[in-house]
Each structure stands twice: as C-alpha cells, then as structure tokens.
Image (cartoon, rainbow, N blue to C red; front, top):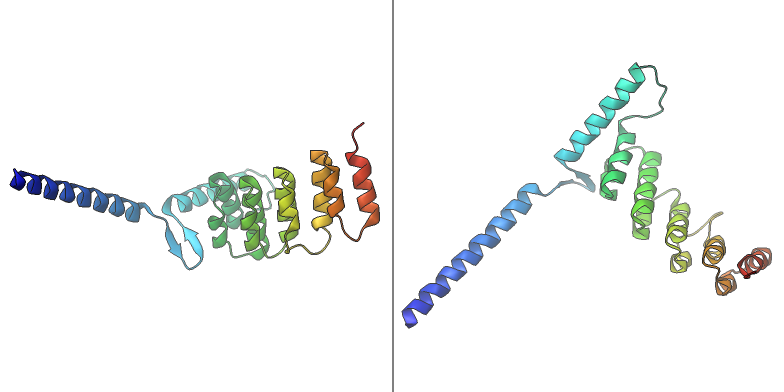
Length: 184
C-alpha cells in the first residue's frame, strides 16, 4: 500500500512539473521582446507595417495626410491600450502624444509619469475623465493646467463645492468654483 502511495505521489509530481514547464515555455515563446526600454512584438510590427501601407496608399490616392510611420504607433498603442508601444517612437513630440493618448484611453495617470512634455494635460484629462479629484493633488503640475484648474473642473462635474476649498492662491477661480457648484 505504501509503495502505491509513493508511486502515485511521484507520478503527481512529474505531472505538475511537466505542466508548469509547458506553461512557462509557452509564455516565454509568446512573450513580447523587450528592446532596451522599448517594447516590440512581431504582431505589433505587422500592424505598424499595415497601418503605414494604408497611409501610403491614401497619399498615393491624393489624400494630404500629415503622418509618418511613427504615427502608426499611436494608432496601435491606443488600440492595444499599451503605452510601452509608444516607447518605440523616436520623435519626442509624437512619443509624448502617444503616451498621453494611451494614458487617457485607459485612464491610468501613472503613464503620465513617462510623458516629458504635456504631463499636466495628461494628469488633468485623466482626473476630469475619471472625475477623481485625488489625481489633482499631484506634485507634477506646472504651467497653466495645475491643481487649481483640476479641482475647479471636477467640482463642476461632480457638483461638489468642497473641492473649491482646495483651490489655493486664486480667489477669482475659487469664487467662480463656488458659484458654479451651487445647486439651483
């Protein structure tokens, strides 16, 4: 009896190890390849090629489109909801546009940390899209769109006058906020 238990146990271990090994091998084989910080995947590259061929066809047909291959990355990254695809873009302006687009599509403000130019609008748009005032309190704001404007817009959307109290250093904006959130 004890011999049967040992044999069954060993057999179960072999089956588990074999199954885990097969699963790991499958995922390693199908895992996207990382290239430095950039993210590449054969399927994604095929989609980029297809996108760019469509663009070239449209230009040949007389359409005046301001787009290049790197713009296709935005289309594919947005479609997949994967900001890592944007990291393949060499042009910083297009890369930032791609990162903002994906961040706003998936409403993930952590992607805004990758944005170099236009970070404020990225945080702002996600805060407004999600109606989440917590995002407004980020330290990364500078320039025109900052926490005050963020609190103002979300207070209007949520009809929440308490957010107006968080507006600092701009009495006019705070006053407008209070007026716009009063229930009528």
